[in-house]
Length: 360
Length: 104
Image 1: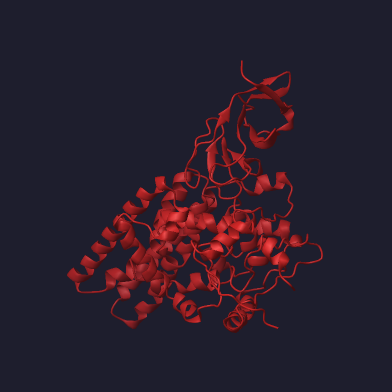
Image 2: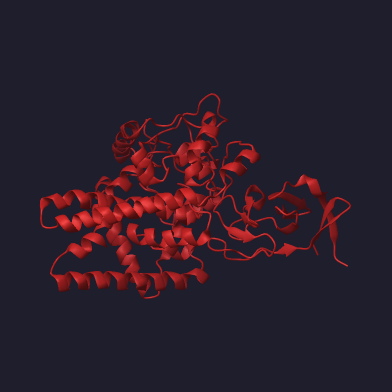
C-alpha cells in the first residue's frame, strides 16, 4: 500500500529545514563502523605522490587530446579527441574538485587548493559556495531541508536527470549564480551556509570567471570559429556525461533522513578507467563515513569495513538495474526508496529518529 | 596561579595523536606531537560541534573527522575553510609523568 505522500520542501529555508532541526536530524551524530585507530591512522596518511602522478596524467591527456582535436578540426574525426577532451575536462574535474575540496588528495595544502580552483572552473562549480555546500552535504547527507546536494528530490524530475547528462539544467543555473555573485550578492540558500567572512571570495572569484569567459567569447568572435569554446566553456557541458554516469550511483533512490551512510550511499565496483576518472569515489559509503581517508586508500578502507557494509554493487549494470526502476517507481510513489540490506556480520542500522517512527 | 588540573599519564597519548578530556561540562583535546610536545585546546571544532579527538594529528595539525577542518595544535590557528575560527588553546606541562593543563 502506498503511504500518503506530502510533498516535501527540499529548499534549505523551508518547512522541512525546520522539521529536520526539530527532529534531531540536523548536525546529528551518524553511525560509524568500528575500525582500530591504529589502522585508521595508517589509512588517513596523506601523500603527494599518487595525486601528482594522476594530475600529471590528467593534464597530459588533456593536452594530447586537445592538440589532436585542433589538428583534426574541420573533419568529423575531431569528434573522437574532443569526446576524450570533454570527459577529462567536464567529468574528471568533478572528482578532482571533490578530493581537493576535502584537501585529502595531496599532502601539501597549496596543491589541493590550486587543483581545486582549476577543477571548480572546469566542472562549473564556484569554489567557495560549493566548498560550503559540500560541507553541509557531509554534515547532513540526504537530510531533506538540510542537504543542498540531494541529487534527486522526490518525486524525481526525470527530464531534469536526462538533461543532467550534458549539464543542461545545472550548467545554466550555475552560470546564472556566477552572474549574481558578480554583483556582490548570494541567494537565500547560500546565505544559510556561506559564512560572512568567506563571501568576498565568492564575489571576486565570480568576476574572474566572467573575465575568463569574456576572453574566450572575444576569441570566438575574432577568430570566427567556436573552436576556443570547445576548449573552455563547452566541455563543461558536452563532457559531463561520464560524471553523471558515476555520480548518479552515489545516492539516488536510497533512503532520506537516516543517520547511517550504509543506508543512503552506494559503493559500486568500477573498471580501472572509471576509477581513474572518478578518483575512487565509487567507494562512496566509505568516503562519507570517513572523509579523512584520501582517495588512494579508499579501496583499502573498503576491505577493512566490508563486513559491516551492504554488499557492494558489482558494476554500473547492477547499480542502474536498481536505480532506473526506482526512479520510475518514485514518480508514481514518492515515498518509495531502496532499502539497503546489511549482512549478518554488520552492526544494526542506525535509521535515525524519523525513520524509526515510520511504519514498516 | 592558574587552575591546573591533571589530565592523564604522559604515555596515555601516543606520539602524533590526540585524546579527549572532559572536565565538568567542558571538553578538551589534548595532543602529543611527534617530538613529544604536549598541547591542549577546546575539544570541539569551531566549525561545527564535532569532537576533534575523533580526528588525527598530522604535521602538528589536527584535522576534524567530519569536514576536514584543520587547526595548528600549538596555536589553535584555523588553517582554512571550513575552519575559519581559531581554537582556544590552554597551557600544558608534564609534571612527574602526568599531563596537566591550565583551564583558567
